[in-house]
Length: 277
Image 1: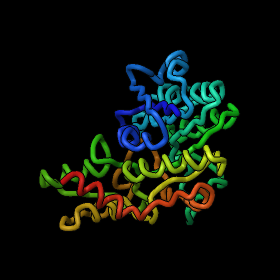
Image 2: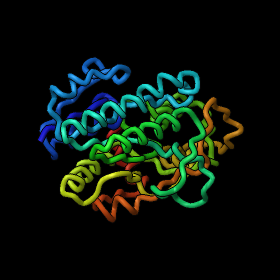
Image 3: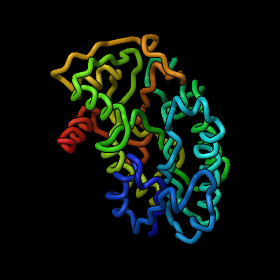
Image 4: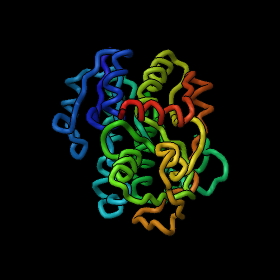
C-alpha cells in the first residue's frame, strides 16, 4: 500500500508523516516536488498511489480576500486534479476541508447535510474543492475540520503564547464558537478513517474535529489559565474576511460509520502544551 502525502511540512501534514505509516509506505511530496499552483500529474502518477492524502492548502483566510484566484487555484482546481488522478489510479483521495463552508447562523452543531453558505473567499474556494472531488467520481474522504493548531508552525495557540511571553495584553474574541482541533488528534484519527474506508465501511463527506465547544477567548484562557485575557466582540477586532459565529461540527457520522471518535478539545490542548514544554 502506497500513501502519497501532499503538504508534509504543514501543521497537519507533518503530524501525519508519523502516523500514516500504519496504513502503508508513505511518499511525501512537498511543494518543490508537487506545486499545487500547477500540479504536475506525472509526479503523482510516478508515485503509484493507492491512497492520496491532500493536506496542502491555501489557508491565509484574510489574505485570500485579496488573492481569490490563487486561493481557488490551490484549494479548488488542484483538488480537482488530484481527484482525477485518484480516479485514474483507482486510489482513495483523503482531502481536508473546513468549518468555514458554513455561515455560522445555525445555533446547534452543523451536520454534513446542512446547507453551506461560506462568508469568505477561503470558505468558498474550499467548498469548490469539495465539489470538484465529488463530481470527479473518485473514491474519497472529505474531512471537514476546524480551528486547527499544532506544536509548530503559525497558528492561534502559538501566537497567543508568544504574546503572553512578551507580557503583551491579550484581547481575544469571545463571540465566535468552534472546536479547537490539534494536528496530533487528527494524525491519530486519519489512519483509522482510511482503514475504515478501505474496508468498505464508508466514504464521502465527514466532519472530523475535537469534541466540545468553546470560544477563541475560552481557548486562550484554557491555554493560559494564569493570565488575564480580555473578552472582546468580533466588531472590536475587525478582519478583512468575515468568520462564522458558530462553526461547531457534528461528528456523529464519522463515529457511527468509520468508528472514529475524537476526545474533547481540552485533551488535545493539554497534549500540545506538554509537547511545547
